[in-house]
Length: 440
Image (cartoon, rainbow, N blue to C red; front, side, top):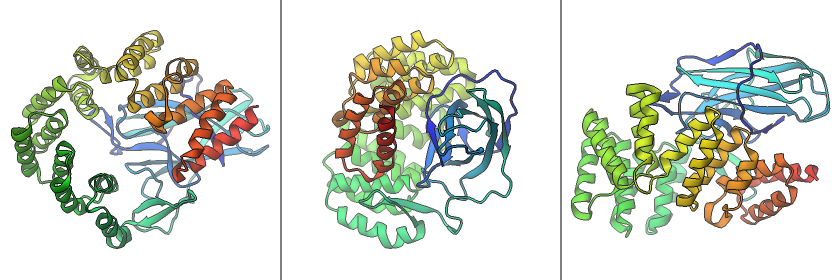
C-alpha cells in the first residue's frame, strides 16, 4: 500500500535507467490523450498521472513513499484506459522500486517520472532524499490486484457507504440500465444525466431512443439537440447527425456547441476542410468552447507541429472575451519554466472566468504539478467556493494546503466536503482527514 504526493516537477538530471511499459499503444491522437494513464489504487480505480483530453505528448512525475515502517520496496501497478477503473485489459505493467535505505513510513521519497509519446510509455525513478541507490524493475508474471476473474468489462457503481461495486456490462445493459431510463423518462434533467452517463460507459446503441425522448420533452432545445446529434454520431449515423444539426440552426440560429458537433459530423464523413471552417465559426462565436479549442489546436499541431499549435492558441486568445486558450498557453509557459508569464495569463483568466470550475481545476492542477503551491493559495484559494465550483478543484486545493502545512484551512474545507455525503469522495476524505491530523 502506498500514498502519493501529487506534485509534478522538472525531470531529474540524474543518470537513471528508463523502462518502457508499453509500445504501439493507441494512447494519443491529434495532440490529445485518448486514454488515462496512472496507478491502480485500493478501490480499483485509476489515480491518473495524465488524463483523457489532456495534451499529448505528456510527461511529469509524482512522489511516493512506503505506508509502513521499514518496507524494503514499493510496488506500483500501472494502467492505461479510456475508463476510470483498472482491469486486466487496462494493465500495462508493474514495477518494483528498491535500493533505498529503510526508514519510517513516508520517509523514503521516491519520485516516478514518466513520458508518454510516440504511442509508448516510459518510466524511471529517482531518490529525492539520496538515501541509497534506487533501482526500478518490471515484475514478470505479476498477479493483478484487480479482479482476475472478470472476463468482461464492467460498470462501477457506489453504494451509500461509498463502497465501489463493479457490475458486468452485459448484466448492467440487460437488467439495470433499462430501469434507470424508465425511472427518468419524464424528467428531462434526470434523463439527460442518465444519457450522458450511459454514453461515458459505452452504451451507445442504448441511448438513441432515450435521446429522442429527451428531444421531445426538454425545454432546453440546445441541450437536447446536442445530445441527440451526439447519439447519432456515436452510432456512426454521420449524415443524419449533420442534417439534424443543420435543421436545428435553421430554426434556432447558430450555436457554438451545435457548430462544434456539426464539424464532427463533417469530419467523420471525410470533409476535413469544411469541418475546420465550421470549427472556426464556432470559436469565433464562443471562444471558450473547450472541445472546439482543443480540437482546432490539435489539428494545427498535427499539420504544423508545436509552433502552429501555439500560434493557433494565440489567435484564439485574442478573440474578445477569450480565456480558455490561455489555460493551455499557460501550461506551455509552466513546462518551459516561464512561471511569471503563466501567472499573467492566469490572472487574465480569473478576471474573466472565476466562476468556471474547469478553469480553477486546470489552473490548480497545473500549478501543483509544477510545484507552485503558494500560487494555488494566492490565486485559487481566495476565489474557490465549494457550492459554486464543485469538488474537482477542492482536491488540488487540499493537496496544496496539506503540503504547505495550512492545517486549519485544510480541515475547514474538509468539513464542508464531509457534509456533501458523497460516496465517491469517502476514500479521499479519509486520506486527507488522516493527513491533516498528522500535520498538526
